[in-house]
Image 1 (cartoon, rainbow, N blue to C red):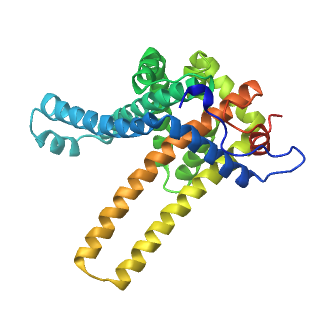
Image 2 (cartoon, helix red, strand yellow):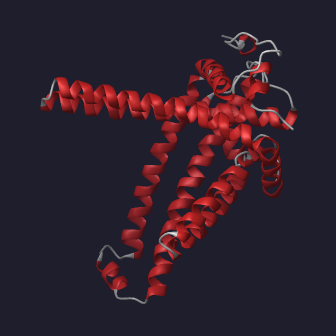
Length: 303
């Protein structure tokens, strides 16, 4: 199907009809699914992201084991007897490296999804390679943004570790605030072509205008996938109760793992599409091609 023939799969809703946030989120999810059906290569990006992460983690592990530890775990035993300050530095350095790795890889492949989806919004038809090439063009800024995110993550971890209860509560609140304020930062960087500073400002500005609706709509989408996962587990448990054999248990377990992975891929892809729809509407006041104006307006109102 040609890019120009992509249209919304839901009928327009009269502006006089008020649509609830959760119903609107379901409709937008269906429209996001319609776009995904035209750009199925998007589904490969979460898979490539996971593979890249685990391969990179293994490579880093090998480098640390042979390059830092000298091919022996005895150095770790020596660390146990070191001063608490030295231990803390080692622990938080490890956490920082882990955060940087996962943030950079996740952001890179999500940026690739944004590029493909944005092209579709504008009547284009990006391939998987085009999406990856677009992300590579922004790799420097994606890395710096991931570096900032990793730094914030480590700071929040330090705050959390300072107190068993209060620190964890404060870190959770600050972490949630950071995630909300930077919700649109990545699309602002790679689609809006904003600088790092401006991307944060633009994201914070959009959230201030639409934070309630954005949170509610995204919660609605998450709830849908959460209910599907719960239903799958419930069906699996019922089958195990009716047929309590090892073969059935192995079959159910394998099927659940496969379906959960598949749902995770779908959820990641649809959420990226959905985020870009909200970003485009919050930024320009117009709805991307293939999405119903009235539905998006009911889901999120720019103040």
